[in-house]
Amino acid sequence: MLEEIELKEKLIEEIGVHFERTSQIPPLAARIYALLMLCPRAGHSFDEIVELSKASKSSVSTNVNLLLSNGSIEYFTKTGERKRFFRLSKNYLKVKLKKDRDRVSKDLQIARKIDAFNIEYNKEKYEKHRVFGSLYKDYLEMHYTNLETTITKMNQLEKTV
Image (tube, rainbow, N blue to C red; front, side):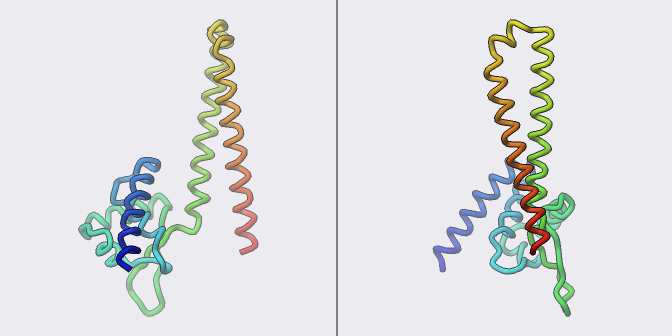
């Protein structure tokens, strides 16, 4: 049991640091997100999150509200209880994939604009370095297609579940 708790705490820290960097969210919000990701039940109450995160109520409240507002988590209530319970949003993976797809799409647009500019105004530079730009655009196009395919599959799965 102690080993499981230590492993979970290390994993929460690792996942938290990852989401802090990749999602540009505060450290506590990232750790709350990780905590909910590893929750063995349907969710945690606010008081449980305070206890497990070892943070103040006001800090937890601020960060839970941030995660609620960006769609990462959602709350639910249980019949006969006044407490709110928090869990990962049912759409959190799809939301993340859509954000990634939008970022990749923008990167691809920018890469194409850079190529167009260099073709027009920096022909020698473009010819010399074209292969690198082409590799990068190929990567972005494959990544975009993969994201689109995965989102489509998720949409199809949602219809059957």
